Image (cartoon, rainbow, N blue to C red):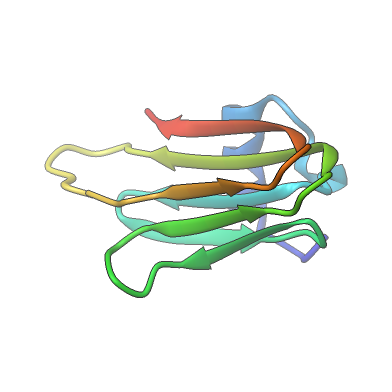
Amino acid sequence: MNKIDKDTADLLKTVTGLDMSAFTGAYNIRSNCMSLGRQSTDNIKIDSKTDNPGLDIHIAPGTKGEDVFIPACVTKAGVDDLVYNDFYVGEGADVKIIAGCG
């Protein structure tokens, strides 16, 4: 896992319920319109879109038992953060996708 700062790890733990110091999955976390961190795996690639704000998430065919977290956290008023996230799931993949905002 790439080193992530403590605040990002704490926020991810709050959102996912997981201990991020041992997290090996893919994630992209945003807070109040700002990216706090991103991590891909060998089988799950997260890239910024080139045509719109948002992400392209590619899950390789046959990927099994991996997780991908795409949380967006809003902690203040007046946030306007529209993104277009697309998931491309390869044939036979069986992964857990946790995405949303709160």
